[in-house]
Amino acid sequence: MTNTEPHDPSDDVDQLRQQIGQTREELAQTVEALAAKADVKGRAKERAAVVTAQAKDKAAVVTAQAKERANHVTAQAKDRATLVTAQAKDRANHVTAQAKDRATLVTAQAKDRANHVTAQAKQTAAHGTQVAREKTLVAREKLPPTVRQQPAVPLLAAGAVALLAVFGWLVRRRRS
Image (tube, rainbow, N blue to C red):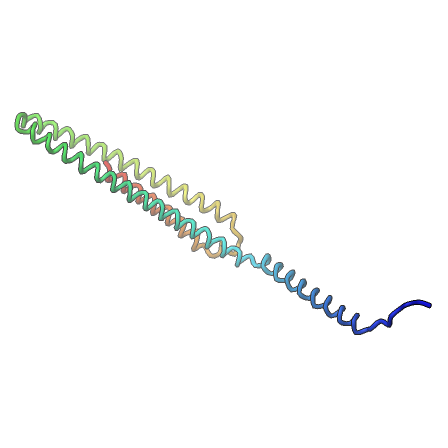
């Protein structure tokens, strides 16, 4: 005699329903994952947002550094101006003619230096702009075609680089 209990078919049906539910849930997750990978435009927008945020952060850091450096240079210039003024007053009492000749010479040298620094700044700004353009073109070629058709973000980044180059030129120009 065999010892078998009667098998309830409703147990098999319940088990099959659980397996079907689990399979449906796994299939839904797989479909969602595939849809996310297929959303190139969405992924490109996310990447563009990250790059834009990074550019803004970098611009803020560079601006803060430039302001800090400008304040430091201004303080040094004020201190130096105070010292030079006192020395000039002392020397002016004794040697007025020599001070006039020296002032003429220093003015000419300052103009020459200013012209030289201005030319360097213009050259640096032009080079920076060219480098930014080249990097923008290289970066643009790496982007998916949908992003290339909407060039607002690369143009903003190029504009930020150009703005930083001009700001750097102005800071250098004030130092001279």
